Image 1 (cartoon, helix red, strand yellow):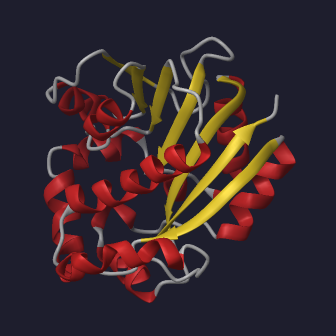
Image 2: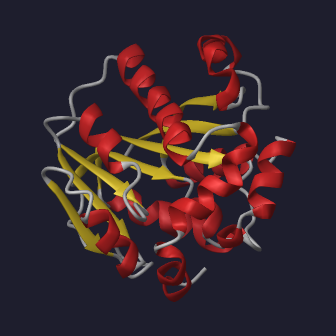
Length: 233
């Protein structure tokens, strides 16, 4: 969608997403929590240095920003998006020490080698496939060498995910991102793919089973996947 179309959906975004996710018994906040539980686990397991600057690329209305603030309490936090209305709504969350900036869809408004961590959460499928490599290259320009790129995406191999996407008004016409595709693009650009975890295997109604997901990371049938890659520039 264009920036104008995202603006048009911004005020109803959360309710629309919650309606699409209702079949699993959860809402957008629940599934955001599951994604950032995966990021927290990765950071703990890899004993990575504490980041000083973190970017939420395509932050939308800011759902992820409180999770990032909690996870990276001492880092400067930034969010960018093409939708000015979404950024207004994100600002109403009043996340401490968080700078929100408009993005023209091509060039990020930052100097090079600024960020230790960049999170791209369910954004790439909104970018036309021919333009995804350019977007990831521009993100790399703004990352410190050794910086961590975190990509969360819908898993096209999961039939429930495909139904949720198909029924969601602001996902009309999108092309989901296959795991092999994103890994190949990242390696070609100079990223090192550290891990790819499959996540969210059980609906919210069965959340007591969430602890078993750690043993299923290898199984490419989760509702989403989390890809962790280091910039080698």
